[in-house]
Length: 205
Image (cartoon, rainbow, N blue to C red; front, side, top):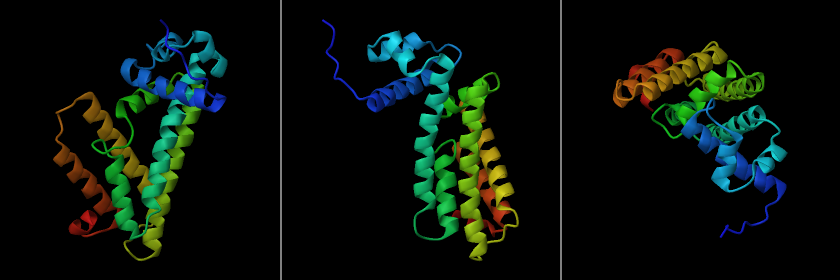
């Protein structure tokens, strides 16, 4: 007997579909994902999925945006707390790092690869990436203005830190066990020290 489904609002249904799409992308990858996989995961028809997202490409782009917005909101909470800018920056970087709790890194590596071929996903990915860097640059600039450290170009520092973290995430996801967590954290600490002109022990604050 088919399970009776609770009638959901349009917003609730869309949210449910996006959560399922994210899970399926993480499991199968973007290339192998089918509308039918998302529908089957929820026990709904393909037509229902297509009603909300007319193509697979639009579903994938919306799923990445959905996942990223949750991480961006968490980032804003971390950098918006009280305390020194350095402490908040440190918390944000540690959370975002490949061994932290941000992002399912497999999902994002899939997204970056797919964005090379899908203009809609590339646009979404670029916009979200810019928001991340802008938020990071803002807290770096705040600390520099308060005299906590020196950083002449917070935007460039945010770019370099993000590039390092993203690159480490690819390595640690693609080749698990090849790089230890301790060494990765040491490199991230060293990068913060260089970018902010800190004495080595200060980066750990």
